[in-house]
Amino acid sequence: NIKWLRDMDKNMIAIIYKMTDQKINTPMSHGMGRVFDTAGAILDIRPVASFEGQTAMELEMACAENINDSYPVIIDESSKPLTLDFYPVFKEMINDRMNGVGVSTIAAKFHNSVAEGAFAMTEKIRKISGLDHVFMSGGVFQNAYLSDKLGDMLKDGGYTVFRHSRIPPNDGGISLGQAVITARRFEKMKSKGELACASRCR
Image 1 (cartoon, rainbow, N blue to C red):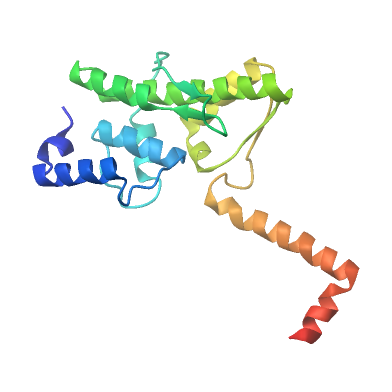
Image 2 (tube, rainbow, N blue to C red):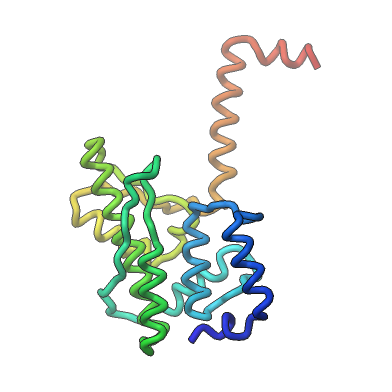
């Protein structure tokens, strides 16, 4: 039921299998962007993206309304730090496709799974650390469906939630953070008299 996979050259599939099996040019990734890319490919939404975040954007737009079901997300406690294992999610997404479940329903269930996985991880962190303040930042929170879903879950769970309002949560906000860090380092150098020395050394 996955068109791009059916149309893919069999030799290319064999090469990919060999690369993954022998770990050739296949670095591990923990970024949520790759999780969304995989989900979009499973749903034939955007097997090959033309720009960063394209698949995630189209996957969000595909979501059906009023879907509360989700797929199981496992917290891998053997890894340091703890990570979410999305393999069961992808497996169930493929099963749904094979059984004729609509793309929009699967897309919504996927988003619900990401939110529930993030919430479960937050609960575990609070149990270990006692922290109950959550900062929702990073490119994945450009996604309104996910951001609203997880935000509501966190608030209902008794967390104090911080979300972006004037500065974007994606790479657009990185330069501001870099500027703040540079400004603080500048002030420290200035107070220690290191700035004048650095200027003379040049």
